[in-house]
Image 1 (spheres, rainbow over the protein chains, first blue to last red):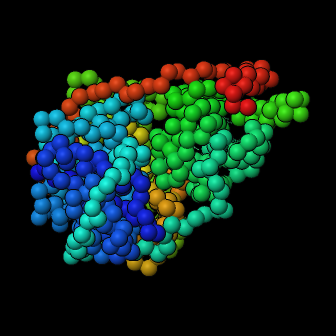
Image 2 (cartoon, helix red, strand yellow):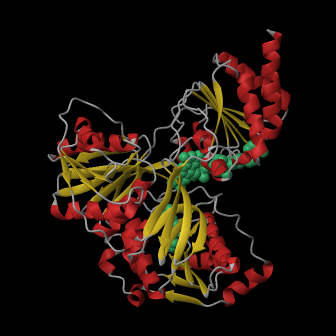
Image 3 (cartoon, rainbow over the protein chains, first blue to last red):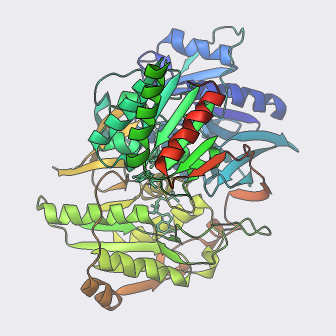
Length: 326
Length: 263
Ligand SMILES: Cc1cc2nc3c(=O)[nH]c(=O)nc-3n(C[C@H](O)[C@H](O)[C@H](O)COP(=O)(O)OP(=O)(O)OC[C@H]3O[C@@H](n4cnc5c(N)ncnc54)[C@H](O)[C@@H]3O)c2cc1C
Ligand SMILES: Nc1ncnc2c1ncn2[C@@H]1O[C@H](COP(=O)(O)O)[C@@H](O)[C@H]1O
């Protein structure tokens, strides 16, 4: 019961950074439990070389099985099979989306307990404890597990630590998938909606959300970004990307980019956790929201309660006037 | 086609949610309402019915919760569900998300739906996982966070945003699909529908009626155990400005940016 099993998500020749973080964290926890961290990779597009490299993140063994990529249920089958033949007490997932689905399915399959959005894990009396923020991050529940435990990390909660580690031999796993696991079929994967925009390199980001009201609302953000000058760009929340108002490549958050600019300005963004996890490390956070109770004010350095349609144009104008006045 | 929609009663958004310090459970006081994310699942069911690609025989709202949770079912019915099922039993109190999913699956098993729809998250639980748990127990394919759903031959074609962009996945029926809030704009119930909601069939079932093993539910049957509460790290409160005079507000923002050498 002292080993941990991690699922590592890969795409286009690289592992997901959050998966690598989960591997490192599992290795740390396993050493405290006196066990090992093992990794499952699903899909033949993961090369031997790629998989072997997981040793450097602390994995003791790596298993690979063939199967349809990007879907949760085949991974549940593979991990359940490993649990049945191994000495695993816990499974660990990095933040994202697939890990939620796999972890939940695995908990059901194994009769395990599950904790999601976990920000920290520790070991006490030979058992794993998971810290799970709840109610919009207003409190943290410390969760232990009666029998098996499934821990789904929050985005960026676990740091990927690359060390010197010998390349691992890749162990092929033959999995017989459940009938229902193969009844979902990926038609297209990873479609990039909208043009390519670069938000990771910018020192200043003006992010817009549903409060902009419509796609054209983003003009107010572009105007402000331009007026702030330097290396600035416009970014967005999932709500507006899903609505087709802004390109996916400019989305911040759990299923988008992680950014940490010198200045981040939020216009009409509520500050949902899935957005926050992608920008909370920004150096200076300014938020404009008409709702004084919006969660974003809980982690803003400067909060303005008001209508962005009134404030943004005047702010941009004031900044422009300041330039010309110099 | 028969569609079951999972709905939950949650504290109203305006209620400050808090945890009972002794048990780690949510304090159930204050105004309660239908989980807003679930209205998108109901709307998705109605869209399928109105889309005309398949004949929808029945839309059944299903909830698990204490007595008061019937209000969520009334709301679901006023929005367009034909009837509802309330899984209500003392033995279920304190169930964690895995136990809740197991119990809901048992209630659904009895209904034999072709499609189970649910919301992207419960406003209070914020687990994002009930769909995947229910699906594994029902041995059905599933997908969560779906923002477009079209009925195709023998299944549903779903779109959703995942880690690397948008995925399109075809899922054969029967299936479990959790919908994201971008999938539709839920309609408001008509006054007539609100008044009529209490007259639509509502069945209350207990653990015995749907074959739930009591050892697998409730606080004692849950695999995740709340052990303690901890204060989250908080950053110092930021400066707040109420915008009354926008010119003054803007001057304050500019001064703040200057002070921090951001402009
Ligand atoms: C698995 C999963 C993954 C997700 N991934 C992401 C992700 O990567 N990135 C992400 O951003 N979200 C993500 N989300 C969605 C997230 O939970 C929120 O739904 C989303 O961030 C909300 O976007 P928003 O703030 O634009 O919209 P809303 O939450 O609707 O907020 C709009 C805000 O605008 C304010 N407003 C309205 N009008 C005005 C006005 N005139 N002036 C000023 N303020 C105004 C309102 O008060 C409100 O606070 C994810 C969710 C899930 C479940
Ligand atoms: N007790 C419950 N009864 C019925 N449906 C539920 C219950 N809890 C959660 N759900 C459904 O599962 C979805 C996701 O909830 P969660 O996984 O708790 O975030 C919700 O939007 C509901 O549709």
